[in-house]
Image 1 (cartoon, rainbow, N blue to C red):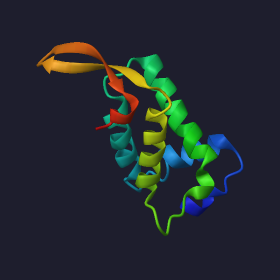
Image 2: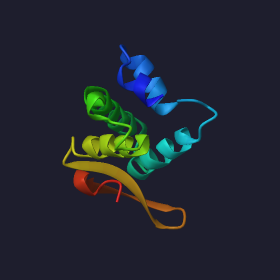
Image 3: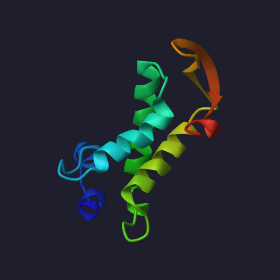
Image 4: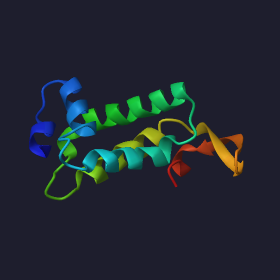
Length: 113
């Protein structure tokens, strides 16, 4: 699958292969789990902008992905870290007490930590 993903001609197919993949393989849940660390607590528009930036990075740098040296999940994590750095700060809701949330600015370099 990774070989086909790299040489995909159109972005829609690339995104589908990256995020959906083969339903028989559990990589989709791992990809979503990685993204959740970054987008948890974001408003819908912010989350969409973040994921779009991650997909832009993944698409633009797809030729740097080598499945012999890097797991697909690591490539996605690299894309998520690059997306986090597209802004200095991200506004997220953080739980301060059970059921109590506070909006905070998180530095892009700290997002996902």
